[in-house]
Each structure stands twice: as C-alpha cells, then as structure tokens.
Image 1 (tube, helix red, strand yellow):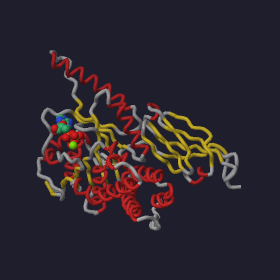
Image 2 (cartoon, protein in one colour):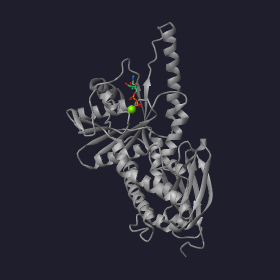
Image 3 (cartoon, rainbow, N blue to C red):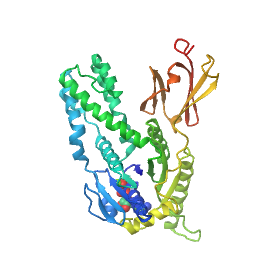
Image 4 (spheres, rainbow, N blue to C red):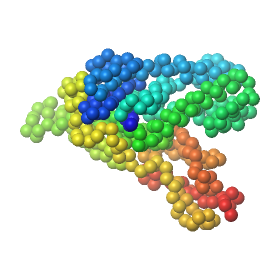
Amino acid sequence: MRVVLFTGKGGVGKTTLAAATAALLARSGRKALVVSTDPAHSLGDALEADLGGEPVELEGGLHAAHIDTRALLDDSWGPLQGHLRTLLAGAGVDELVADELTVLPGVEDLLALGEVRRAAETGLWDVVVVDCGPTAETLRLLGLPEAISGYLERLFPAHRRAVRGMLAGLSGAGRDAAPAWERTVGALDALAGQLRGLREMLGDHTTTSIRLVLTPERVVVAETRRTLTALALHGLRVDGLVVNRVVPGPPPSLRGPAARWLRERHTEQQAVLGELGGLGDVELRTVHHTAAEPTGVPALLEIARSLYGDDDPAAPGRAGPPLLRVRRTAGTGTSRDSEFELLLRLPGAADGPLDLARVGDELAVGVGGVRRMVTLPSALQRCTVTAARLQDDDLCVVFAPDPAVWVR
Ligand SMILES: Nc1ncnc2c1ncn2[C@@H]1O[C@H](COP(=O)(O)OP(=O)(O)O)[C@@H](O)[C@H]1O
Ligand SMILES: [Mg+2]
C-alpha cells in the first residue's frame, strides 16, 4: 500500500496530476483511489465525472471521491474549538479574541488528511493518490497540539503537568481538574492522537510520497526552497518535484512574434529548471503544457505517460538523505572526551533567519518563521550544545558530554 500526495500552490496542476497518476496506476492493474481534500471539488472536472464522498469506480481499477471537509469539522475539531473558547473565556480572555484565537485556517485540510489515513488503512487500495491543498501551510498544523498545549501551559501554569502528560500520551492526565479543563484536555488528547498517527504515516517514506507541483517561473525557486524547509522541519520529505506546464522550444527556422515569445518563455523556463535541479537531491520531473485542457481519462493518461515514461508512478522517489542524523566525531563508548554532531537536513535554511535554543531534552529550531521542537536522542540529552553551524543544507549542532549527568 502506498499513499502519493500532490501538493503545491493553487492552479499549478495538483488536481490534474493526481487524477492522471491514479488513471495510469489503474491501467497498470493497481486498485487506485484518488481523493481530493480541496473544497473546490475540481477533481470531478478533471476526471469529467460526478463525484461524492463515497468512492466510485470510473473505469477498471480507477476510483475517485471527494472528502467532505465540513462534515469532519463538526465532529472532531468543532468540540475542541468550543472547549477552548470556554476555557479562554473563563480565564478572562475577551470573547472576540477567544473566537479569533480558535479559528485556524487549514484545519479542514488537516482533518481531511486524517480521512486519507483511514482510507489507506482499510486495506482496500493498492495506492491512494491525494489531491491536497497548498499543504505547506496545512502540514504546519501537524504541530497544532503542541502549539495549543504551549498556550494552555502559559495560560494555566498549574496544569502544566497535565498538558505534558497528555502530549506524552498518558491517559487520565488532568483527571483531578475542573470539568471544563478536563473536557478540553480530552478533546486535545484526541486531536493529538489523530495527528500523531497522521504524522507517522506522512513521515514514513516507505508508505508515503509527497510530490510538490510547481510551474517554472522565477519566483518559485526561492518559494520551493522554503516549502522544502518547512516540510523538513516537520519530518516530511518531498520525494518529487513535478514541474508542470513546460513549453517546448520552437524550431530555429520559425520566425515572428509568436515564435519569439515561445523562445523567450522556453529559455526562461529552462533556466528555472536548472536552478530547481540544484535544490537538494529531490527527483525532478516535467510535464509539458498541453494545447487543450487535459480533462477526461484519455487526456490524463497522455499526461501521465509523458510524466512517468516507463517508471512506476507509485514508487518512492529519490528524497535525499534522512532528515536527522547523529554521528560521533570524537571519543569512544562513554569516554568524557566524546563529541557528537546532530545533523538536521534543512534545505534552504541559509536563506532565512535561523534560531536555535535548547529547552530541556529538546532543541527548538526556527527557520524562516517556522518553529519545531526536535526531541534529542537519549545520549544527546546528557550533553550540552557546544557549537552550531550551517553546512550547505545541513544544520550541524555539536554536543559534548555534560559532566554532571554523563555516565561515569
Ligand atoms: N500540463 C498542462 N497543460 C495545460 N493545462 C493544464 C496542465 N495542467 C493543468 N492544466 C489546467 O490548468 C488548470 C488548473 O489545474 P488544476 O489541476 O486544477 O490545478 P490545482 O489543482 O493545482 O489548482 C486546469 O484547468 C487544468 O486543466
Ligand atoms: Mg485543485
């Protein structure tokens, strides 16, 4: 079973490529489900079919559905939102402010991904292809339980332990507390559990492929680097960049304004492709700009064939080295002169402000406005940070044993 997720900005071609990929998978004999988490519901347009919440088979092996995000909103996020509002109001936070604090754009998308996970776990499908929203934003919300509990800890310091216990997955945390608090903790606990499972699925490279769709314009190079960094911070590796709407170069004999336009466009796009090729080790594929809108299975299949050639569309792509590595650079065993390096792969980190802080057993890493807590491997928890530097795409943090807690 594999999950192949297409993400990227609006209008770049996510829906088209997700549908095309599923169509080709079905042709190769796989039982494929393509689902859209986009409330705009354009998957039906791409496939030229009427879709609903339940998967329908469009042709041999090809199934499609739209996930109804509004229904999801009501039974999981809704109650939590209500409890949070009550808690905040009880703590003297103005009602309007409380409302604002509890509205989170993108939550629908995240909950829809939860549905994808359920579909993947039914065992009914060989491949689930997902037409996502602009997921960099969405996936940031994977850190939502931590963010909410961070606020709760600050607002209600007395319940710090309950919040901590809840995040660690300890049931019964907060049992001694007031009912409003208890309900909030319960709902937050449920959300945290759901997101934990989701993060596991999305972060597991053997199960999930994340493909970033883009169009070859100058601005996208910097943007793509930022997206890769933001996702990397959440432990998510993009294993394919799909550059859509690439125009052909006209034959040299062709003259006139149209040929000139096309030639310039082509030259510029090729330059962008060159720059994208230099972004880490992520696999890069291109799709040409078709003359007619590619809708309906035959047109989608044509696009998919040009995209994948003879390759398996569902195979894990090249995603570069793991995101987090630890290596010893001095000493052996438990010797006091040991030194370790923690390498965090952060493509594009050099572009933005980077901040780093040690918080207990964790390291807070902030890159370009995205912050993530990284739990340190146990050996490093007994060390102190002695240096940190950026090495190409890696953030390298150096650790030396803390004599107070290091094994003697
Ligand atoms: N390679 C392509 N050539 C020509 N038109 C395309 C191509 N890919 C997508 N389109 C068209 O562009 C529009 C936006 O594509 P869509 O897949 O809906 O983008 P997204 O889901 O990212 O918003 C659609 O009308 C689609 O048919
Ligand atoms: Mg779309």
